[in-house]
Amino acid sequence: MSLTQQRKQEIMTEYQVHETDTGSAEVQVAMMTERINRLSTHLKANHKDHASRRGLLTIIGQRKRLLAYIQKKDQQNYQALIARLGIRG
Figure 1 (tube, one colour):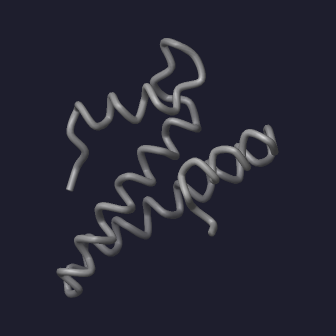
Figure 2: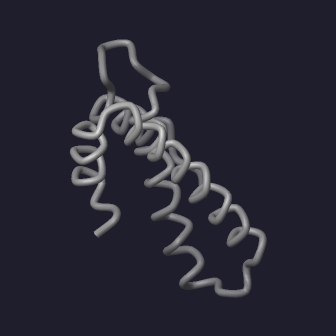
């Protein structure tokens, strides 16, 4: 279920705000979105895995709070981020 180190690095380089950025809100949202997508496909195949479902809901809640923070901080950055991630269709 977890992301490989290589995939994490790819996400960081794609969404980082500056060169040494590894933990900004944008990067965290991108990581959570990747984990949500992986867990969603896992739960489609394993619909009785309630522990993973609870973890998915936890990650979704964290991402929702971070997106609210980004939206409050910079509306244009928020719109660009959700468009890049393909969420909130």
